[in-house]
Image (cartoon, rainbow, N blue to C red):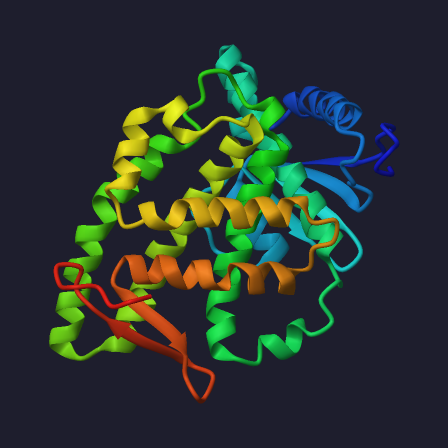
Amino acid sequence: MAGQNVTMEIKVECRGEQIGEAGSMLAQVLDTLLSRIVERDRDLVLDELETVILADDFAEALRAETGEQVSAGVVRALHRPDSVRLLIDAGHMAAALAGDAEQVAGFVHLFHRELCRIHDARCRLGQSDSLEMLLDCEFDRQLLPIAESMWAEYFSTRRAVWSLPQGSDLMLTHLADLLEALPPAMNEEIVLHLGSGDIDGLFARSCGRIAHLAQTAAHCQGYLAGLERPLDEIGPEYQSLLESSPLGPLWGTLMHRLGMLFASPSRTTESIYLALQGDVCAVFASLGLRIRRAEDGGVWVDPFPLTTARPDQ
């Protein structure tokens, strides 16, 4: 299947005894859904999407395919050098299709977003000649996955905005929860680690939290950009919370940068990372961790509790 061709020739594989007779119906639904999405978005390139795996045990199927140990999931693209396999939790899909219109629309959008992520990842595959050299540096190895996940969230939500269910909160509620809970939690973490002198442990423990905040912000910004509506119009209460949060001063710059990347005719993993590296560092600093590249290529961390004066960034 080419980007301009809506004829779908993708194998659907059912795994697990619980799927039973529902497997055939789910496969037909996926075939129809794929065709309709590509018919609507003719520039969506899914040439290398080879197989869709419907599994009644998502975690076991993922372990069998990749060796990863996860407790739950719904949809996941499995990239190979020359092909892509898409793993879907059959139970979740069946329950969504058997539910009300909102649940059906939610699954359709989730599926559509993953197709957009596949499109972006395959377009960038093999396009960064110096990526391996870049990843020889520990600082870049730590920050690149954060920048790339931010981009993947932004691209997929902006590209798939036309299938967004009506009434969706754009994940703004979750962002609001993070903006309220994360600053005091990070401040406590910093104070505890400063007392023990375990700066490496502080960075390791904080990296996941800060990455999640950055990804969530980019996720929301993709929807806002796709809808072409400002945050204060959609939810003034969210705008007020954002402005009073550590992320407030960074919001506009990050949205502009992601928008410029989206408009670029040519993107590589390396160019995305280099464009967003400063923004990733700024998110760390907004929560009390000033980071920079050490002389040996490692991560130099300068923590400061948020209750004290913040250093110039």
